[in-house]
Image 1 (cartoon, rainbow, N blue to C red):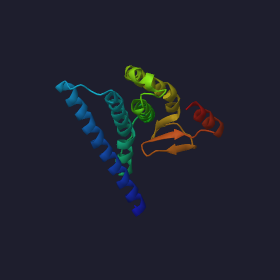
Image 2 (image 1 turned 45 degrees about the horizontal axis):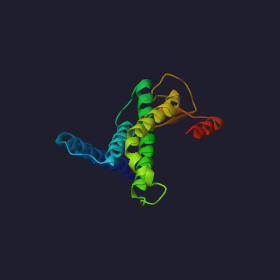
Image 3 (image 1 turned 180 degrees about the horizontal axis):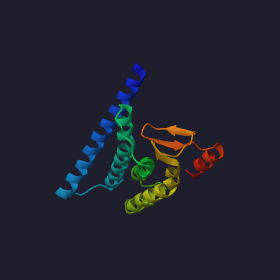
Image 4 (image 1 turned 90 degrees about the vertical axis):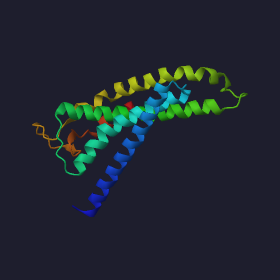
Length: 185
């Protein structure tokens, strides 16, 4: 194995481990806050969803990719591969949506009292939970098309135009379909 491959594998492993530990510590923090009865801030709901989305993305992509990089024989079924890719895409999309929602909420919160945003300050906290639910539902709806062409690495289908992910493979899209999917996103 080339030193470049080992370096890449170690970087993937480090990112996965640090990401899982960081998200696990945030998850434990919010569980402790919940059971002690502490009053949470309005941004805590967004951060809880962000933590869950990051966990989902890390567990569905980081762990299998790390195992495949180090030569572990991970061969999920077709359904397993479809589920892993769907969960990864939903987690990644919700993570980006949560960050955007957090940014908007913080802009509204720090705006001066005499600005156009002042009337939104009181209304913003009550719209956080519906916005997060909408974000989850939209990501699930938009990403339902992607697992269609994902199969297990050892699938019995004989297709030569495949992209190998180490533990699953996917049919490559033609250029027109790729453009349509990018516009959908």
